[in-house]
Length: 405
Image (tube, rainbow, N blue to C red; front, top):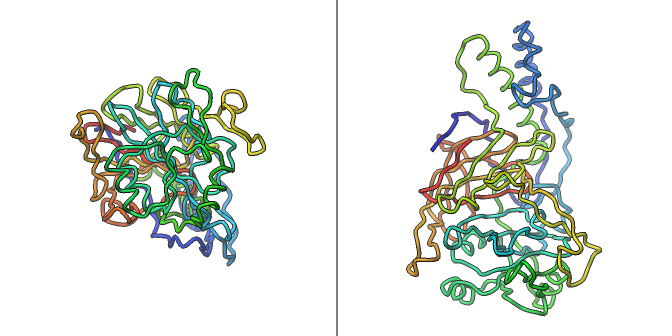
């Protein structure tokens, strides 16, 4: 496995109760201290601002002023959210990614967390977790696997799927899950066309009506440990300052282990090349543009809320490239199931993890003690890592796969 060693400043665990006090501390002493060193570098200063050198545009993001305001945040994404929506219903939707009509997916940009893993024969599938979706169309919807269910469990979501593996279906029925399997009151089939059997969709309105009809209530989401947006911004500014210092040291012939920018990530699942993915960091948006290994952008359909009705997305929606704020690659133990076709993935326990956020990378570990507990991420010395807010893609990479950056 190829890896570039870097040290990413981690954050102390943030309490994920849905309401957080934003400290908004500027930590300007870090920035000015670093910039002071830069000033002493003399002729190096001009070179430090070159995007080709560091991916930095020469302007530090603005630090928010200090205040003592209390805000509510989504337990799913870590983004600001009205307090009355923090415990709104969540939906975990099994979404295919095959080349047999599953692509482009629809509404996937609105999922707060997306797990990707091999479902069968080297083909990946998504478990996409939504809360407060507004997309007029969401899907396609396919079958459930046990390991997706175990990743879904901490989110207290309705499991949305079209059948599934026998052990997963049995676990849903016996485990007291909120469940919505193939149902033409709350789902519909688009015309087949090129999508073939990947034409089962739902809508935000259908999901809300289903939740009301069945009295499922809200969701008590156990989300990932997150930074607030302000904490993430401070971390990003500090990373930029440290990167400048790193370049100064490198230019002066001294070694450094400070933050290294990570402009490109390659996730290889060790199977079919068509399902390997690439992420390219976009500093302007602070997101990771997702592409297939071929270089083609991973585009999905965006369907405006007002465009309601049972429609084919090809006829009513627009295409955009997926661009999550955080990418996590977890190394997992994986083998073929007893049918020699589907996969068996060990979900609980621990393993290596690679966390990519704010343009930086850290190699650490993941831990999930039980099905009902959420995954946590740690540095090599055991400190918990708080993820930046925003959409998060979690890649489950088999032990025979790789993560290159």
